[in-house]
Length: 179
Ligand code: 5GP
Image (cartoon, rainbow, N blue to C red; front, side):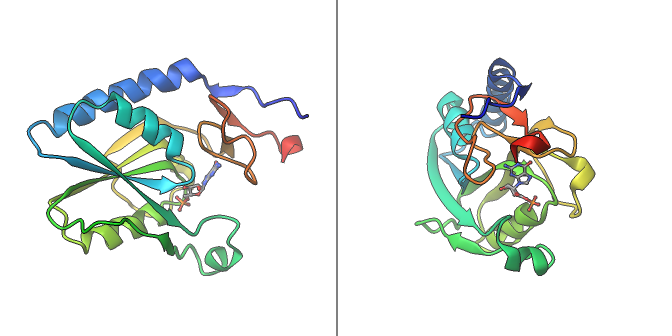
C-alpha cells in the first residue's frame, strides 16, 4: 500500500474553519424558515456533512452530480458542464446554498449558478471548501470560501484522485509520484 501524502491542511485546521463558516452562515441566514444545502457529488460529501451538522438554523440536504474532470468530452468542449443528477424538489422561493469541494477554473460553479438561478430561488449563494484563484477563469461569485490554495492537485476530505484518497481525514497535495 502507498504511504498517504502529508497534510496541506490538517484535520484540526479544516474543522476550525468549518466551525467558522457554519457560524457565519448561521448569522447570515438567521430568521429564515429553512436553508437548502445542495452538495455537489462526490467531492463535497464530507465537507457538507461536517458543515451541515455544525449549523443551528433549520436546513435540508440535497445532492446533485455534474460531469467533471476525467470526462474528456467536457474538457474538450472548453469547460462545458452537464448536470448528471438533479435535486428532487422544486427550489422556487427557497434559500439555496450550493456546497462545492473546490473551485478550480470556476466553470462548474458558474454553470450551477446559472442553472439554479433560473429556478427562481429566494436566495442563491455558493460555498466552497477550497479555491485555487491562480486557475480560475470564470468570474464566479463565491460567497463562502474555506481556504485559498495554490495550483496543486489536492486529495482527501472528500476529494479524490481516480477515486483514491477520498477518505483521508485531511487535505493533501498529491505529489506527482503518487499519481
Ligand atoms: P472547475 O469547474 O472549477 O474547474 O472544477 C471543479 C471540479 O474539478 C471540482 O468540483 C473537482 O471535482 C475537480 N477538481 C479541481 N481541482 C481539483 C483538485 O485539486 N483535486 C481534486 N480532487 N479535484 C479537483
